[in-house]
Image (cartoon, rainbow over all chains, first blue to last red; front, side, top):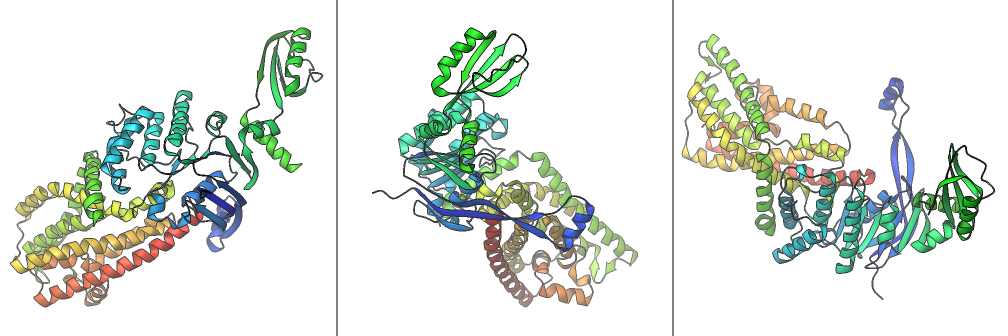
Length: 326
Length: 267
């Protein structure tokens, strides 16, 4: 049996945040008496990741995803529980550990603003003590995979957001980390660029057998990359399993959007009305009945246009939460 | 050893490239660097004039020598980490640094030295100009010149360590600025910026002697200008070494606790 790449047991994190009402009076009062409140961001989650796995880490904003990634990479120390990444305790930030991981956050950067990308690469080569031969080889590969060719000589400040993100990802991978923590790596990027990053992550995973833990609000990212997803909400684990099971289990529905000539007739006889406005109605229908309901709608209603959609990931996740509550 | 051989040269090289992007800012810094000592110098020259050419044993030429040397020593030893740190912590720019397998202090040392190397090229002609304009007088001695070099290096380390340690306050408060203000205000008096320390009242001199401040700037200045005996020089170098070690110890304690505080809250 191989050792686990990541193991998390009963991991929790509680922040102490200052509380203070608005206004001058409250501000003065807080000078004398600081009040704090405890916020449990992560409440005892457990999961394990095998080497080489690509796992999607899902949940709404504030679910505790970033907090967990920060604990796993060593930026935050946990309030409770056990974490092992490549056999190390992340928060010790031992050099050998840091050389084997990387954390990419959409809004954090390692690139030096004023100098060409290649110079930033060179800095990281020195800081990570990467051997010349491997360094050159890695740059060639990254340049090829991410199409960096023309960007390397440009100062970072002259790059567009998408170009910068590609270079940021490349910088984060120069030392060929075994574990990648990717927090919203495609945020703010256009569809082409998103796809590029996605393909790249898949290729990197295949080539180096690296383990990837990825958060994203884009279902396309998750669908393309992750066979397995871990879903958390309010700091608790809700689902851990195959992506296909998640969609199947929590969203046995399709959404039919109907555009009509006029008005918004009552279509509740066809399915659950999710949305209804002048000339446009959205229905939720069990998957198995989609074809039949579509046929009936077309035959019986003055339909201008009709589309059938999978519910967006947000909705699937919503379903997961609903399931948990009931 | 490979830190010095492999890492520092690359940091230097790229830092110098960064500094070149800020030529205008560099000139503005330089103007600030020159103006302050020149203002004090002109004030003291005026005072000396009204008092018959001398204040407490300092002639006009002595004041000129003191402030011009002060400017150079200050330039070679000052740091700006305190201003940088607050931004780093508040903006979260500190996080990626923490995840690199290199203590962030090395970056700052490299950046500082790169900046100094570059700006010294500008400071030298300015110094020559000031020497021409104010005709300073000093008795330079070879042994003092030789002792000046280690005193300058120790002064740089002492200031760097103390200011880095104080800058770490950013981990607990977002108002490092206030700490800066107090630090620089005390320095104004005790490091010999406002006036040469020997012109200060005795009690101020006594406080200064037991504080780290005079060893940061005033001591190398006095040493270079031949104001110190051989014994005073040794005493000064020892004081610098002891204070540097204390500052380094303080730094490593504050660093550990600071990082712990930072990683409790995150950013």
